[in-house]
Amino acid sequence: MQRTVDSHHHFRFDSVVDFEEIGTDRTSESAHAIYAALVAQWQPAMLETASSLGLFGALRAGPLRAEEIAAVTGTNTRAVKVLLDALVAYGWVTSIPDGENSRYSADPAVAASLSSDSIFSLTGKIGYNRGLSRSAWRTLDQSVRDGVRAADGIGNNEITAHAYEDLVTGINFWAPPIVDKLIDWTTRTGWRREQSRKFLDIGCGSGIYSQLLLRHFSRAVAVGLDVESIGRLAVGQSVELGVDDRFRLRTANFWRDDWGTGHDAVLFANIFHLVNPAGALELLDKARDAVADDGFVFIVDNIAVGGTESDSPQDRFAALFAVSMLVTGGGSTYTLADYDQWLSTTGLERVALIDAPMHRIVVARRTEEGHS
Ligand SMILES: C[S@@+](CC[C@H](N)C(=O)[O-])C[C@H]1O[C@@H](n2cnc3c(N)ncnc32)[C@H](O)[C@@H]1O
Image (tube, rainbow, N blue to C red; front, side):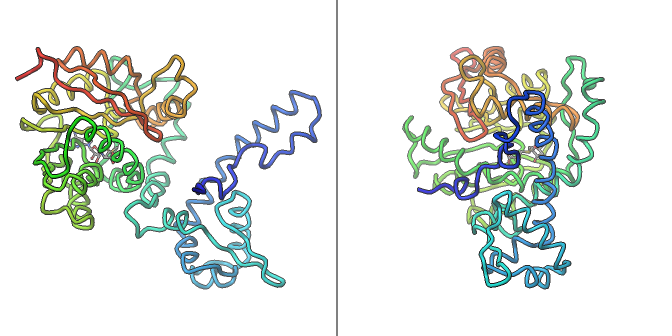
């Protein structure tokens, strides 16, 4: 199978710096590499603009000339051509020679991810970047100088519900390969598609994780727990995915409100990185009470393992993501050792660690002492 990432070139420093021409001067080589790193911010700006002006939406119709794209998107022909040529240099758009001019085309998978009408599109992430995230990154100096408020140096992140409205749909794309891993693992432990199951999706966001599980486990039901404004998105999406008869939203605050009991799966997707260590213990305490004796707690997050795994993509991404949590006001990424310690403090034990793209999944269950 040809991978999408192979069909664009992987954009790296040597995509724009011909290091062979520098010779042996290490300072000069570093300076060129640093310059290339510093202008890496051009790429998200261009992708965000091209997406929000509808360039990728237009290209879904097939290859177009710059003036046609300008006409469809209401943009300036010369300027849009400048932008498209840069997107060609990055590898997101292809230029097809066409007489004097050229036509531009985009891989359908790329165009769909950057247009707003697909469940797995990243346009929500773009909205989040352009709103909260962009201004937050400007405060990195201050965040590093001052740390964050909480006594242990890591606060609970308090991104507003409004900012989450963009973010939660913009990270749906993470779910399918992770849910495949969950299905694979649970199937190997003996779960069958047609068994009745009860799932609890804490901070469900769009509800994508439990909803994709419901599509596989045809007699399961799921409760998604989130705040009201986000919950509305989850209910709408459950209709789109055809599982609205088995997905129920519970509008609740996961700190304050009761979670119920006897769930076969308690799922935390992208929740633990939002909280501080004391918060993590609170969540796991509640998870232990909410999960059935023979059920599982699934923690999907950016988890660093360290040691021989330090150089893994998951560990590297966890290190970067921790800074993003720092600038947005709290939370962090945690190590497997942190999770193991929290689990053992709360009457739970880890039974599996599963690698997934940009994430890892910790699977835990009640210990004998933790049984109800
Ligand atoms: C990063 S999103 C993750 C959403 C989803 N689980 C996913 O992975 O796509 C975090 C979610 O937690 C919800 N959340 C944060 N604090 C909450 C609280 N105290 N009670 C209920 N939901 C909360 C947010 O509204 C948001 O939908």
